[in-house]
Length: 211
Image 1 (cartoon, helix red, strand yellow):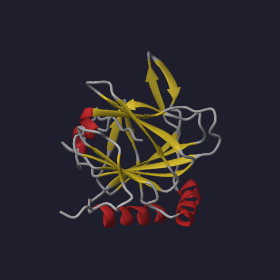
Image 2 (cartoon, helix red, strand yellow):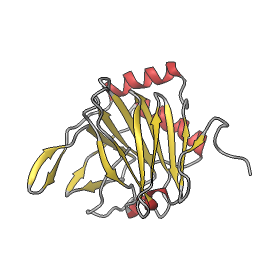
Image 3 (spheres, helix red, strand yellow):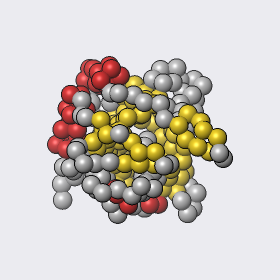
Image 4 (cartoon, one colour):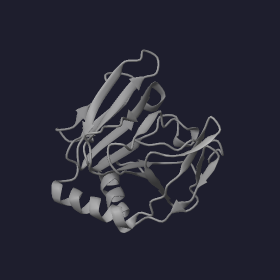
């Protein structure tokens, strides 16, 4: 069987699912253009979470973009689905051509510098399907992406370069958690896009997270 991934792709997970990294899915010039366009095209929003009865801002900005009829809620907050921008449409087409998967939505996250982060989580909501395919594209500052096995506690880390693509599939969301740690050394911004194929009807208790 012919692999869907190029020869320079790397399998990150040792077992229980797959996380294929393509370090240079977008060449540098295209990645630079996408980073600049996304920063201005996307309607970035600052959302808040309630922890221990206290309302705190999420340590990043984000936006939910989806086809008509695709909605999502988490932590009791309904996310408004924005329309696809020209750049997001181009990126989605490139991913569908590569992976042959029908992505209908994307969560965009803006990490303004190394103080912005993402805690441990899995994208295992029922609306994502039993073995979801999550395509994570990164532009801007290189950040470390950590995996932690939910039973054994084993950890695996990988750097996500500018223009890279990480495709998580199989049991990866059920057996592993992932996170982006804070880093005082990083002063540049990073934009991450996690493309998904979400069911048209979602549970009000669904949590929306990303890499």
